[in-house]
Length: 242
Image (cartoon, rainbow, N blue to C red; front, top):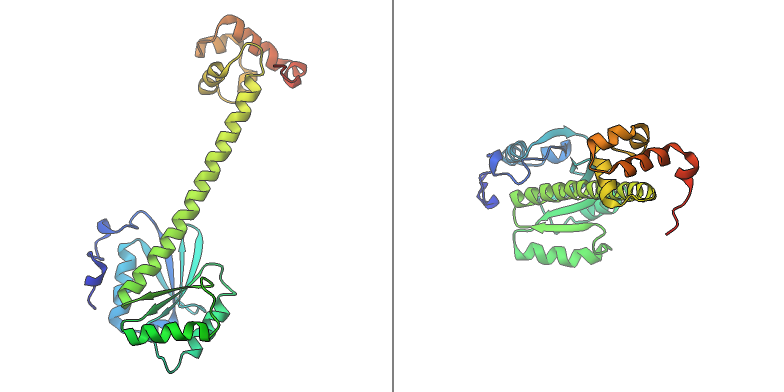
């Protein structure tokens, strides 16, 4: 099958935008049997080049991609038969209630098929975006679209995880600064120096004045105040008065 529509050599992993991402692609057995072997070969090669593993399984949708810990389901219509559309839309109505991330990719190479899809979309009670339909001109483009959707979903989740971790780190650092700068005479510079050289509040409370002087640029008076303050629970719990 001609892969020129991809705009690159899909068999070369170094050219792949997904080369740093591993994932799994589950293909429905029944869907596979309805496709030309050359298209299945193309899919297998394309997935391998993009670090995805392919498995043939008896699933309800045509494809399920797992990327970044998220599953994305697809119906992939490669033969738009305007005289037999009810089975397609009935499957869509059923599967959209089973998968939170669900897309329908439809191959519509000619204007007549595009017009047929447009007319039937509302006839069968579809709601825009529930699910999202992705019309494409050819098989290869359709499969590449699916992989891009699955990949972007996984990347988005990873970004959300990283943002959450950063927020937690910032929150933790803010709490640390609040506690350490509540010690009389200790400012943000001192608190940061203690964090880098010694660590947490609990770690600072365990070290001696000499260790503080040895590992930071704090003065003797400040080191003595820190040691005394953090070893005195009453001082530690007393709120700072500004």
